[in-house]
Image 1 (cartoon, rainbow, N blue to C red):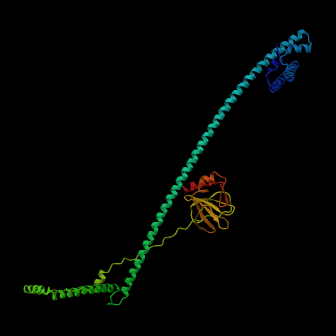
Image 2: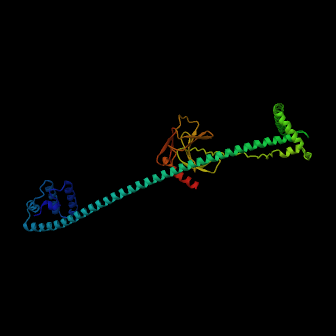
Image 3: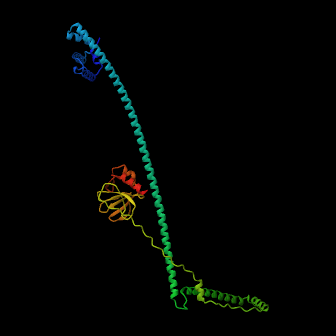
Length: 400
């Protein structure tokens, strides 16, 4: 028995949307304009109506016979045609169902594969990003350590330079004193004694007075002892010495063949010629080029030096500057009114109408701060990061 469900390929559990979809599909295929027949269209329409009203389990052929009331021979022939068409439609329906199931399975497999690939890609990307962040942090720490070592070496160089300058100053002052003494000696008249020799003679005179005083005191003590009980023993000793006294050779006088002034000049300390120390030239600080364009990073070089740098200008006329080796620097426009500056802004020098501050740490001191944000707020001034990565890459190539 052929039911209306068999004609549409449905059952009692088929949703209304699927019933409508199958009806439209069969109507488009069995339409008289597309090699179909009016009887077949009527059968499909009646089957759709019965199924929608919950009567899809009824026998379709019997209903058609009652409605049409055609002769038996014609009815049999029409029945055979409908059976043949039904078989073809059922085959098409089964084929379409199989294709639909295959497509759904392939879609589920593709969706699962895409989801797994996307999850794996996200994990790989997150791992790559974490590795890049870790590498950037390691590089920043190495840069900070190198900067500290550079500052320490620079301090040692400065201290050594100061010691050399102090030594040169002392040498220069000693040379000036010696030259002044030699000039006094040259200007003194012939036969005059220099002040140095006079000081030596006066010292010798004082030493002679002390020796004479000691000898006089010793003689007085001897006389006192001789007048006392020890005088007899002293006289006996003197008599024994004079009795055994022998004739001794007279003392020979020493004759000097050199003038005392010449001896003093020979024994005078030798004075080294003063060394002329060239003044240490102070290196001129680099000066940035002023720009009219604000809000974009650009590569440039200093006015008085070929060293490259990158900079960005704020709307208030201040600059953020980065060189090959130094820290990020904040060129504060002196016309900008500001309150208390941040702790990481270290004053360095003055440059025309700018106050130059180094940024050794904190906000704006690392490359990551600029790459991971759209703009940074420094001293109540916004500095965008537009074109920062391209400018920083150009700077790295110029610095190699």
